[in-house]
Length: 320
Image (cartoon, rainbow, N blue to C red; front, side, top):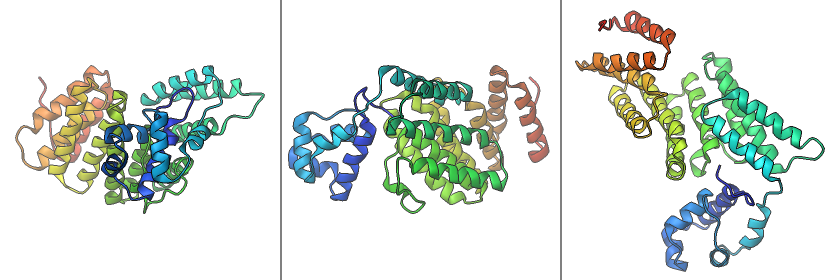
């Protein structure tokens, strides 16, 4: 979530977005009415810029509401030391550094020992605690864990998107943190054999992350994860052409951002799809996967991949 030190711009942006859609207006309509550039409005609705006063007046007239008062209600009331810790938490969350996140949450709570936490901060901390729970559950594939994960995702999302349901989930704008919950929700849906629903939710997450990626390239790791999810879910449906398409999206973005973290998994998934389609260069793709695991010093996982290839597909990778 991107904010200034004074205002929760993401919260305010969501209000602007909801007002516009409630009035059934497009960004182009707003431009015709008051001359506001659609790109400027998009940045405001995503929480990446604070509106000028004259823009607030124009939008107040269009939506028939006092936006000055609403912006004032989005004002933060915490100190700079807490904002500094929040930034560290944002950094740590991209690497799933759970120990660091937990210690930083404790640090915030220690700073606030003798006074009540502001609502926006207590909400943020609770969502991070949900994120930690989900990260601990993500490698558990049993039905019970999947159901717990699903409920945890909805609980986290409803802290900031109170009315969100399976039916209306595509009606909302989501922050990068909320998009992480969408990706976790999609994974839990796939483990409950709701593959089409998992694909739909992942696509929603990707569309939201693309909007944020323009402003913060660190969101690329979440985008890459989204593409990998789509490849995996389509693999479960035996849609191998789709698997390859999404793997290539993930590979291209990984190269663009020089982020190799998920590349071994993506190449592995792509190689299997190529094998299933009878494409002769699948061995080269799988070799790239194993080489990247070796480079990342994940030798145990490399052996697991080799065993899986031999056991499940009768594929033996030649030793070079």
